[in-house]
Length: 528
Image (cartoon, rainbow, N blue to C red; front, side, top):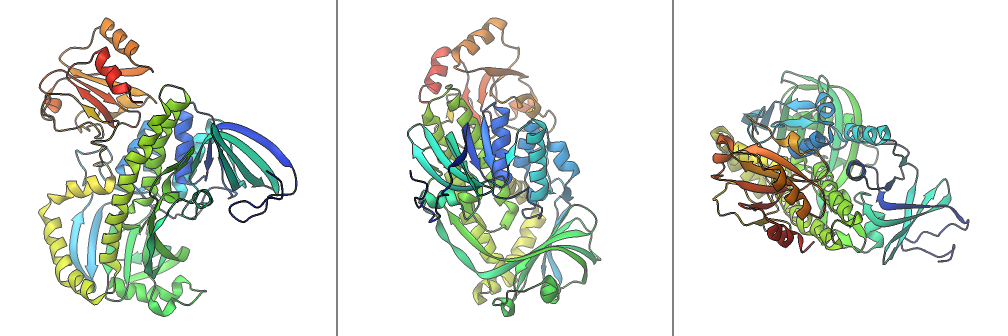
């Protein structure tokens, strides 16, 4: 390739020679939450990587704000959950307002009690997530290559050759695989011609981080859809700090120099209750898109996070979905790179994450349109039916665990996917593909922190030393055996006799069986 050749982005290559050539197993493009999670996961598995970003430092703006229970469970496995909790703020209650009147009210508190150790909604903004993940990397001696702008790539049979720009000089990076975590406008996705179908919401939206004063409590989430505009108030860390998101008043659509002071009166009118904005820490106006790819992979290149799917902020799912994309992919990359699995294993990344991304795009799109649309019919439904229905449903109490499972992503399952297999004759209340069961009275999650597969043995007595040796000899990689007594908590889930549960490194169930032998292990492992 000649130095003056034009790449696929239309940018000229530098006429200078390559400053340096770097080699690694995995190149991560983008050091936002998704890229930093990928780096931390590869670090856990001992995989060599290089992570680059065109920025000069981590994000300073708060941006994404909610961390779900499933993400906190990942942080717990990494040993950093306590830092996230101490730097975040729990949301105690949720209210739905219309024309200044409270239409529905629910105490969030422990809405997921009994479903996760993190049974609440936590505000822990993107900047703090990045700070925490960067700290983990730097303390381990890893370098983040800031001010390295991705320019182009060339796929080869055994890897990827990438070109980055640093201080106006060309850097060549040779890697076995590349993970694109480079955001909604992803140059990697664009260069490889991934489809990115979807649309753009007609309205313009704003986001503001403010310090406010009102008569409401300061740990309450408020959503206020009005006839003309929409706004939502989300509590942030500290006293009286709030994130406000909403639709921009139409009279400001064509203006370029908008400040929050221009629209604060419209925000107050939409909310309908008294509030004073004492200071504004951040304000931005933007268009919202809902788009997704049809495949998370092209050869040795994988997409994760916003580079693969972007959607409305409804439910606070965006950043969390990116974190879990990286979490799903990186253990698979590690097993393939260590030759403990066939490259076919990497196909399960798209198989498992694409259906969730498609569902999420549909789910957030429907909910967001219902709350923000100014269509007369939807406004009528929202005001006269939806609010009353929401009040009745929320008051009933029973939907709250379901709501928690959906919004926390703890209820998502890989049931029926290639890595999920059950040969048990017992009528169990959990399935292969499900997240590992959680027990409030006896949380077993701390037993599954090693970056490896775990074999959970549930029985009246522990396996013999000889049986454990035979099991370990049957697997092509090290497996941690976890013993747990067949007691009431398991009986309530349908376990009546001895059971073996093979738990993946991401704490999803791979295999369930009543008896474990070499033949069954080989049959399960054969494909990958």
